[in-house]
Image 1 (cartoon, rainbow over the protein chains, first blue to last red):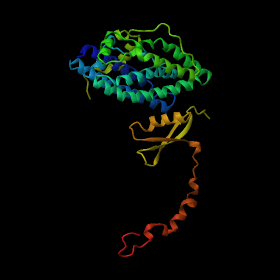
Image 2 (cartoon, helix red, strand yellow):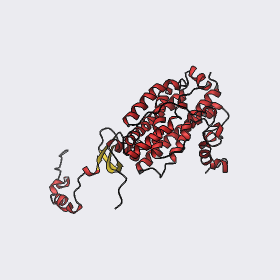
Image 3 (tube, each protein chain N blue to C red):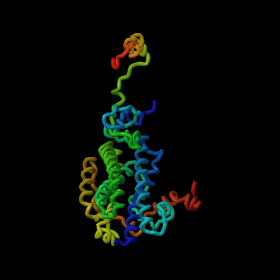
Image 4 (cartoon, each protein chain N blue to C red):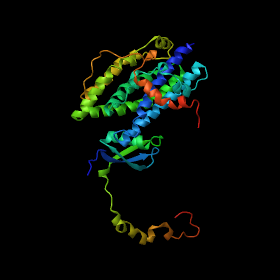
Length: 252
Length: 96
């Protein structure tokens, strides 16, 4: 029997990653460089909100205190969120958004493929559905990274700058703490560090094709597994949770 | 004239099920065929309507002029023997 508290925390991590990046991508609505890209980014956002909903709903059930997915999304404070820091970074320019999407989606393709074999049937089912979505996100981001990297001088500069700025947030994707360790032993979670060589190989191929430099691994940001965030998450939550904070339990 | 920053247009055709005709959905902007397929998917197939997509550069489509309508289509209407209603079905004939 899995320690339900570990499983709860693991589900919050998976759910919060989807929820926070979904919110970031939704900020592109009406602001993308092309109307088609506007639709693509908001579609991605909808994929992620669906994933967040499923994971947080299950988290609420595992916790067993009657909290719904909405309670978990809109009534937790900043320190109780466990998304990776890379998800909460501001969108920056379009190159930054696409570079992040590539780095994140490449990781998520590996993660959800592995999680589709989880011994937890609900996680396995959500992972199998998510895998189809993240493969498309990765393909879309890959094309843009190559197009902009191997594009004009300006698009190259912006894309290289984005990849460089994002790199120190990638180490966190592969971290594991005692929650992960326990669930890995039970066959529920995946050893994220074992996904790293494949991720590095794939990202290296794409960046090389895009005529971009692969940044050297240096200092890596960390903290999300303990609920420690950048200054940006609080601003996201103040917007995302406004309605529930101002009008608790509002319905319409 | 303002520069068009929205890339070239492509016409999108989608097949709703295997074997069905491809039906014109509308047009999208894209820089190349791969991007056109992705944009077509995001614009026209969000509710999983299709099995397959065609994209064609709009400039590759040649259209007849509406002014040629009479020349192209009117002659058909005076050849009433082209219409099935021209033929009388003989009594007792099951098929014709």
